[in-house]
Length: 375
Image (tube, rainbow, N blue to C red; front, side, top):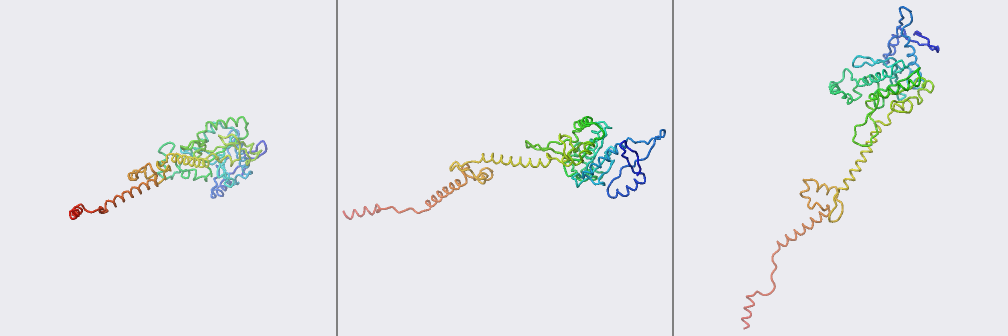
């Protein structure tokens, strides 16, 4: 290590030498921990002044941010990485000032941009856009069918599962809906400048960080779809140092109150609420449909009782309606009618089949012969 500079508050900025950088890579990279680029000692050829010292204040702010997170139990010492590059499709490399991995604190991954107000607010919006674009990339060895789908139209990548995207090769699942979360930590600036910058981020970055409406036909669904949004949270280094990174000092763009980091990254109005509202809406629709169906249920013109489902289906289905008989009567009444008709038909058949009965009284010829003998 070497001391690069000493700040006004007497804090020292230490960096790795070339040899130390090589040793660090041998030690850490086999464990999956990426090491940032080597900081070379370069001096102005005329004045002899060390070049790049403006980076020292930024590096100190990044280190202080990591220290506050670690002090609050958010991240192990080896869970922090600085200046990690994210290569875009146009070969541009967006470097994250700090990458935090703290699964034990329910923050599997968090990208941190520390800004000392040396960048314009719209430059920060451009950073947000580039992270959003990186989150939508596919790996080079992606399945051809997935690549064809992603190229079919501009928004087709949104229908490709996150597990198939490049960012899942680099970072673990976030444990929440949405893309890789991004934090802006402002340092060494005024509250007014922070407020103005955050206002620009909220408005100009809405496309990249705001949730959408769920595609549903149910009215009254208040849940929001965060699946394609970058969760963006903001705070200041001064707040972290005064209250601690575990306190309610984080605010999410699109929200008004400050919360703890884990709370602000959650989506209480996200997919869980959507499932609950959809279930309630489906149940209500089912009750409404059942009530409407019950109101249409036929009533028997004989006994006044409602039709059973079986009888209703029998008279409604074409193939069974032709032999359903009188469609205005219920099943029992229909059965009674059938029984009466069958009984009447059986009686008629038996009557037609019976022999004729003999007539009473003597035959006419025998009566005439009897009168002749008496005469």
